[in-house]
Image 1 (tube, rainbow, N blue to C red):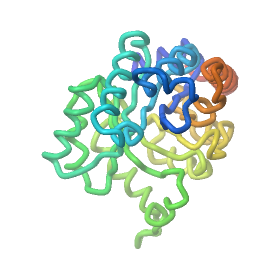
Image 2 (cartoon, rainbow, N blue to C red; image 1 turned 90 degrees about the vertical axis):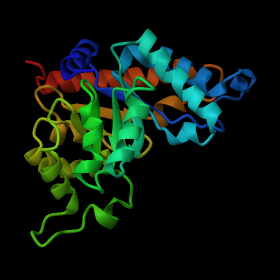
Image 3 (cartoon, one colour; image 1 turned 30 degrees about the vertical axis):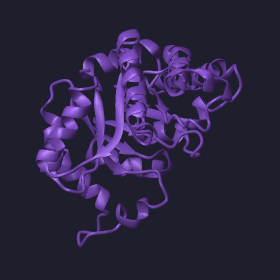
Length: 277
């Protein structure tokens, strides 16, 4: 998906919501156990219910590959279903890959050729040659880990160099030249919203994928205050707060209600900050 299409979807739906499909078979409603593929059945119901309010879905690959071949089949069916039924929706492989060049080529092939993902999350630790293979695909995106929402982010990402800059700033300053605003995004945790001022000073127009809103306690209003651009520039992810809001037979309806609440707040934000005007 190119940037123009993504922006059009955000504008039409008045939403920059990304729903994380972190599908844990131990947490999905028990009545789905009778399905041939409970994971896909759950995902399909969540997708159908939340599609009017979301612009992106983000399957976390770990929740599928832990089940081996059957998990990969559930993932493949999920991605194909989104592509067929909701082609305007951006699909993120939350895989956090990153290795030496020839291995990255294989990872890129897995997510961009064998399955129709629009983007993949990539770790920058091994440098440019571990990232550029993903950037060779037209209309595909790399989403580089910059400043994550977990507590352990401080272990390395906040370490200051001799220039008195934290490591994540160096990652942004160097990596922004590897790609463009049309094929690179960055992960910035919502729990790090106060850092968005520094981040926007370095990458003023790149899209940011922002996890941590909802169950992790991040504030959508704070993220928008410091991170939004005239073209929105944000994809804010919510996983557990939406997909696990209800464990009964009405789980999909409840998920839709939760997604709609977020979408309405996002519509107000887009209006307040005069995005697309």
